[in-house]
Image (tube, rainbow, N blue to C red; front, side):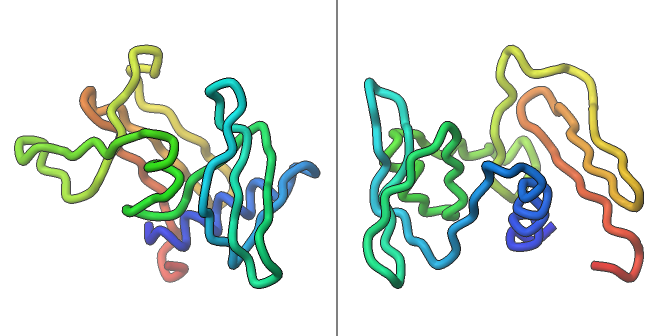
Length: 129
């Protein structure tokens, strides 16, 4: 699934929650930390600088992520032996071993634990993608 479609899907699902807010045209410039924990971000917007504090901060700013860099995370690059052509997160020790997913009317989201990486699939009905 193209990244923009996936982000639109996530935003659409999150809008069901009254405390969810989405800011478009906001470029993160820094993370806000408190006692070693990320508690938000500062961003540049068409209206000026903005500070957003939140219980959950999601960095969806791409391969050259400011959020990832400022938080001190690094990209896990797959080796050639894995045969995957994109970045992937390695499963953590507490992740479930079995495949799981969500099935809804006309939608399927599946997560496959491949032992050394996660594969995710979102099924799009024929003619809709």
